[in-house]
Length: 171
Image (tube, rainbow, N blue to C red; front, side, top):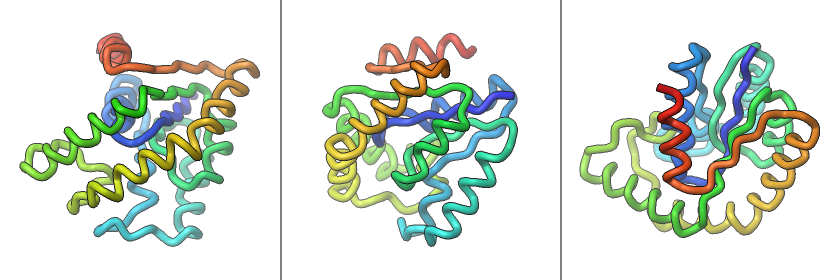
């Protein structure tokens, strides 16, 4: 039984890491952006999101990356057997998100968030990154620390070098 929650702000490499973990450990990978958004960055109805999220959480094995609705994060942390918190400096999330936007625009993005074809507006993406850092991350850090104190495995990744080193260990 392996249930891995990967949390962190946009652009930090959560989905790439989750895909690798899912492949390496032979467990299903689910991307929160795929639950949260429909094509054109239209929000999925909350009832549908909750139903899909609960269905994933109820299964025995999963890698689930992303934030989703704020109220769904504590249940994910509670059910997870392992938590990975990608918690890089804010400027790095902006940088990596900008690189992803450029790759997307130039047709070189291998895996689009949530499998969506339309690129999110950069201004909206950057506003979200800022808001998540200011309003959500303090609480997420606290929830992760509490889960760790309660005995859950927590890996905190604070840089691209740490992310690369963690991913290298998976190969």
